[in-house]
Length: 199
View 1 (cartoon, rainbow, N blue to C red):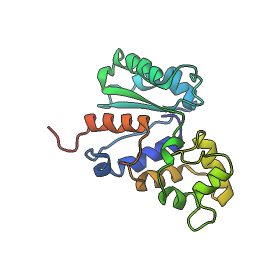
View 2: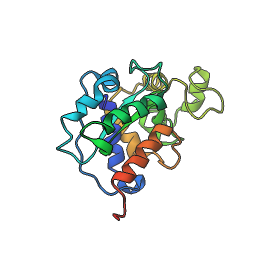
View 3: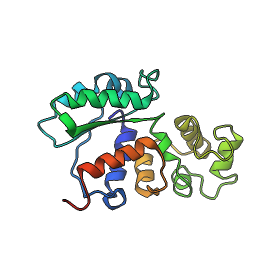
């Protein structure tokens, strides 16, 4: 995966197997030292050396900042899946390209994001502040620039940015309410690989 934020978000999700509708999973995570661009361009070879050690492999990175933004995220994901399918992994590995970036998953309805970001009990509310500051259009479910908005909200609340915040959010938010396509793809993939009720 591309960075520690993703690693911690995944830890938070794997800590909730019942909510993810999967069985408990034993897993390892590997953060590529060159982040999103390396995952987009060399992620298949990065995973290749591990194909005999694991049953499944997941390549997870942000579309934004990947260096492949000119290629639509769905197309990029299909391209990488094709490369994985012809590698030693075969169909045991998949890519999840988060569009535009991981922070798109952060913006679930209150109160959990507000709690973690230090906005509980503040006036204006986090969502009102986002609208006032121009990060969020009135009525939109999440900011167009989710990472920048999240970091700005943390600064405004005096909360230090940390990968552990992503884990805290992932451990708390309602997964049923997350409509993000890349999150849904991740969840479907994990459900196929690790079904809650083994067949």
